[in-house]
Figure (cartoon, rainbow, N blue to C red):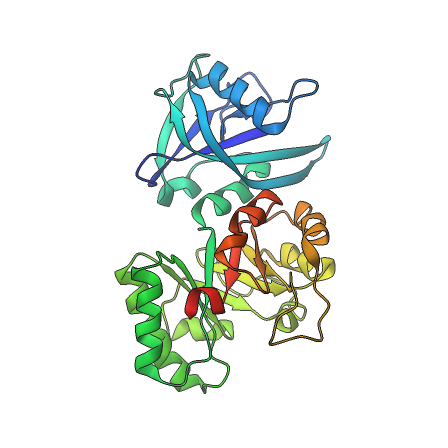
Length: 308
């Protein structure tokens, strides 16, 4: 099935449709779309379905996420596209209820279970900044503000392995203030307990920490991400309820030249079954963003390209 995350012109709202009461999972809200006809691609099906259901014409769309989901009686594949450029004003052409919903209110609507990963993907940006190991605090602050203000970064992971807990907390509080100023989210590359000292938006787990957990270590109202490098770690991230992950290294990197790169082909195969947003990491630059989206990634994560 093909589905669309249709975003308003100002980027603040998403269009939802309510399933008719007389069909499977009737009354729940969903992202508009429908089944593929024989020989149709996902995008071709989406263009047809959105015209039939909503009376709009897609001008431009890009892949967002592909979701395999097992219901008790069937397996479904959702091929989800993000649509920001379209002609017409959407309405329920088949009598169904449709509604523009603010991003921050999406989780208050009841959805079929297969739609839940789409909620995370819709709310996440395509660029994920991982901060560098900066020793100069003033330089750290200026580089972070430049990334937020000039480059439009809206998701930041605070990585500072060389700092002790108190120094890390002090940096995190300043970083959080800057992120709040520019409407960005901050996740802490630290132990989950540090959320008690810093009101950040979530926590990022190392792959080693990830594999020790039996359950999600933070509340559902915080973002949980993790570093992954293979299928076993992706499966574990899904098992404990991570909201998104990085998958690396896609290319050989100067920091870990001994680690074999995944490469685009294997990356795509791993992302296909991840069931959550995945950021490509390892030698990524903004020039790779479109390619990453085309093979199923949420976008790219980087230290060097975004920080320096």
